[in-house]
Length: 372
Ligand code: UDP
Image (cartoon, rainbow, N blue to C red; front, top):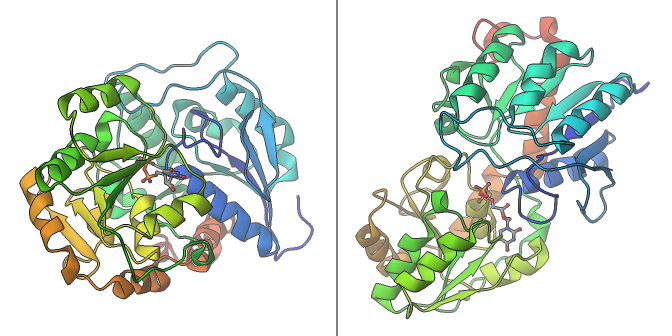
């Protein structure tokens, strides 16, 4: 454990569904990276446990071998609890158990049953950052048991996300943040629109493709191709759509592509917990058009930094695209500067950690937890 009371020793448990830096873990990868980097620059010590093959520039990672978890989205509400043989998640938890005395706090980013179940068996406290909305009954159940026993230990991105859980009031909203220095503002733009994220059914890419097909405006697509079959279906349904897939890019390369575009389209079918791509686009001065559902509905200022349209309405997307020049690109950048700075994100996480580590010094009404 750290001897300097101003400095925390933190052990991050990464997502077990993929290697960091590949996009397989979705938006939580960026949250882990941003937070770890910023905490390390501000006197704290962070070790990240992540599946082997993970890589982040500048941040050391303790690689853990083993087979990965299947992402819970797409498995259905009644799915059972799954662990493969030689589970990387099991190995990560085992490693964490062995080294726990060296840390003040373990921060779990894995959206999975095991770390919740194991929480009472650890001596070092565990903060759970929940990166998605409610996905399965088995997970909701173990999470509810955990928060009952360890109040104040759940963090989420947004209120809308928290509301998908039966224990919504017990979640602390931490939002998200970016290193603004990595995203360059661009007042000028091309005609192209952009769509970003994992290519998977819950992301509703086909609606964005249908909208650009109607308008004849090019759409650039970037992100990890998670579901090949789904992607092939889109290609055969819209063979002549003006779309171009550019693969999965690093943040540096991605922002160069985003900032040239006219707007970002977000078409989530699910309650998107946050939608890091929304603030990445805004940081480049690119307005966001999204279905009014989940995290993006809490981020976008309708008519000011983009448009919120009726969920699942391609017509709504088309109308909003036709109005996109009403949006001032500089207002988009400014929103991120004021609401989504990395230092503010770090402060919110540190305040949360403090409340977990020193609960009695904080009045319960400040904790935002049930029964605090
Ligand atoms: N992303 C990336 N390179 C790409 C496309 C996307 O690094 O070419 C990242 C993007 O920065 C974001 C993540 O992929 O952090 C997608 O996260 P989001 O929160 O939008 O959705 P999720 O995948 O978690 O549902």
